Amino acid sequence: MTKFFLRLIATIAANALALFFANRYISGFELTADTGKLALIALTLTALNIVLRPILKLVLGPFIILTLGFGLIVVNAATVFVLDIITENLTILNVPALFYATLLIGALNFAVHLIF
Image 1 (cartoon, rainbow, N blue to C red):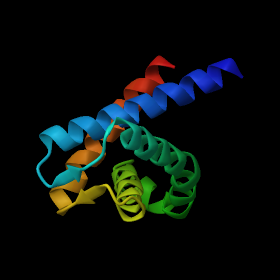
Image 2: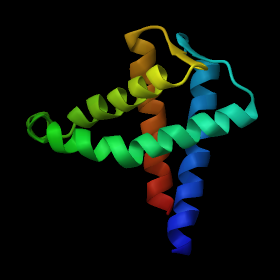
Image 3: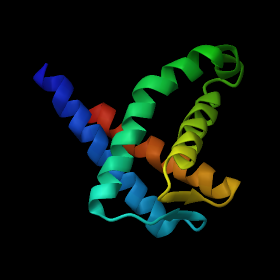
């Protein structure tokens, strides 16, 4: 149980760090939030990854298999897009910004899951 909470906290922190870096380095990705709201947005992203991602993986399973796993980028992009819709402090202006933010967030989440 302790390992689960440690992994959850590490995932939230990685999502917050990824959102911060995406805001800083990706043009078209605008995050207007202080530290508290950034933590809340990271918590929302983590919740979406826990709830929405498995459903999207199940629905898009054949597409993921046909694209040899590259369809997971579509699943992650859909998750980030839903985050953009439900949070008022996050604005993604164009598709390349969504794509690059998806890759950045996915890479940091992958690193956290390798460590924990």
